[in-house]
Each structure stands twice: as structure tokens, then as C-alpha cells.
Image 1 (cartoon, rainbow, N blue to C red):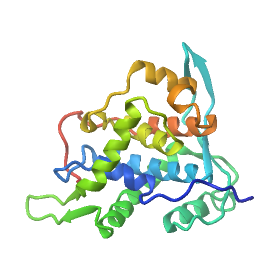
Image 2: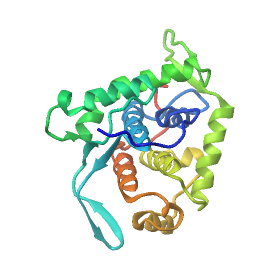
Image 3: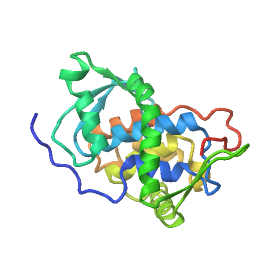
Image 4: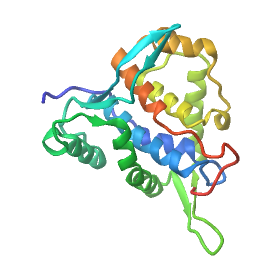
Length: 237
């Protein structure tokens, strides 16, 4: 497959950014299963941003919205190394010579990948000092406290996007994951109805993002499961 250039590297990868926003100042996350799936979805998002894959799903338009008929499959575009160990391993696993000729279901991939994605990227953030781990003890669960400077910088970016400023493709992916994981309330943001309409039509703040990337971001955000209980933060942080 031919090499396709992607955007310049960032300090944190998309799954790392998602985890920093998912961890509350209390060191907890709202729902460990939701966070695990969201982290795995963010991995696919990172590979999409690097032009390594896309998520394809049939869709139709109704009342100005694009409705996706099924959960989609992964289309591999390029297997050239990224320089990220975890990303290159995923590309190798997604190679048709390994995964087989049948399209890889996004849903099945996320269900399989979620248990490995969360501890992998949580450990990376811990080693880099962006998460501070407090080990568990009797009657007390392990917690991970996000670095406030790193997290607040991401919160500022997300709030800027929700305020209606133009979104690049990276910020769109991050915001769709925030929406899927119901993190808006924690970050003090709400996506207005008009903004939803504009995103669905590919106009306004997202007009510079190619349609195939918008679709990929939308499906990945949809694939993050609803929060269990919808109550206060649960264990697992």
C-alpha cells in the first residue's frame, strides 16, 4: 500500500487525550467499561488521523441528518509504520493477510480491543507523569489523578470548539469522543442543536474536514456505550 502523509505529531495521542479528559480530579472515571471502549475507539481515531484507516458505514439523510444504517467496518488504507509501537501493532493485526479478507467490524474490534487499550495508555500517561497513580489497598480502589495543567489545556481546546470556533479534524475526533462518553457536563460544555445540524451537514466549524473523516469520527463517537447507571462516578479510576 502507498504511504499517505498525515498531520504532524502531537504531544499526546488521541487515546491519551481521551483518557486525560475521562479521569476526574478525584482520580476516578465515571464508567470503566465505557472508558475502555472509548479508549479503543480513540486508537482507531488516531490511525484515521494519520491516514492509516477509515471507518465505512452505509448512511442516508433524513431531516438534514445523516443516519448510519449499521455500525461500520474498518477500511485499511496504509500499513507503513507510524513510529508508535501500539499503532504499528494494530496496523499489523488489521492487515488482511492477518485479519482475513472479510471486512473487520468496528463493533467486534472495539469489544476485543477494549481490555488492552485502557491499561496500555493509562500506563503510558503514568510513565510520562500525566497521570499520578495511587495504588489500591484494603477497601480502597486504585486511582489515577490527571495532571491539571495537561488536562486543563485539553479542556480549553474542547471548550473553544464548543463555542463555535473552527474545528480541525483532530479536535473533531476528540469532541465526538467527548460526546459519546457523556463528558460534556464534566467539562462544562453543551453541543447546541444548531451545531449538531451543521456538523451533520459538514458546514460551519467542520467545513474544512473531509467527509470520510467526519463519517469516521461520527461512527467512532456513536460506538462509545452509554454510561451505566448515569449516576455519580463509579470505581475503576
